[in-house]
Length: 222
Ligand SMILES: NC(=O)c1ccc[n+]([C@@H]2O[C@H](COP(=O)([O-])OP(=O)(O)OC[C@H]3O[C@@H](n4cnc5c(N)ncnc54)[C@H](OP(=O)(O)O)[C@@H]3O)[C@@H](O)[C@H]2O)c1
Image (cartoon, rainbow, N blue to C red; front, side):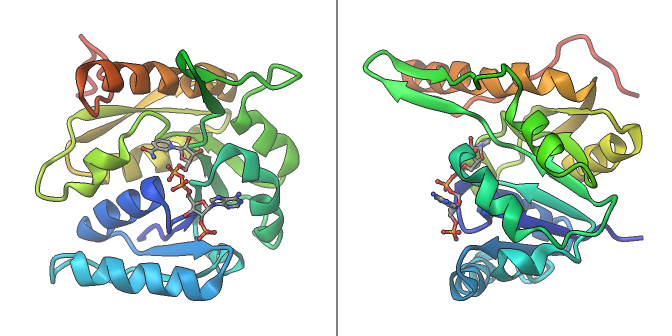
């Protein structure tokens, strides 16, 4: 059965890039926005840029994502609460994927922002939405790389969850993106470490003029 995907924040850099890559791979994607018209416009603009054999992307309000098998959160981490509120009608057991990175910038560059309780954003999503199966993934994938549809990606996508089936579903979605390899990492508590990797990558990118991702060495997944 085809897995349907909704992307909360699909009008933005990461969401748009993921939508494009999945549409090219034949995955049905809906873009969700705080403003329904903005979601519809973003989908139409994206479709105009996609190859003719891509699956058409549709778009609308965030609340229109609740019939999707998998909803990817791709909004600024500060806006996770209102975004989850808009998804309140998500049926029990649906997959919520957090790609959110709590980070900030100062004169010394990017840095990870720790929550008061030390838990990751993905764990906060799980606590706020206990009826969903929460997965952390796509934290380290560059939206700039995703947007270059003529170039395959070249990176691993670490995936964490307390639900093995949910993790497997998201690994399959990661694998559908040409050049990406989903890697099962382990429990959701490891999301804090993944989230904190992104400031490292941004700093590398700034120093070396790159759009780097990560690869696990000496890992043969068969
Ligand atoms: N950019 C990347 O390369 C990348 C890679 C990996 C992970 N991430 C993570 O993915 C998330 C999204 O990153 P992004 O760069 O795609 O962000 P973005 O382009 O700044 O924002 C994504 C979307 O979120 C919505 N949004 C923006 N501000 C909001 C607010 N104050 N309240 C509610 N919604 C708001 C907007 O959609 P509407 O206005 O249409 O609602 C916007 O198009 C972040 O947590 C980031 O850490 C990003």
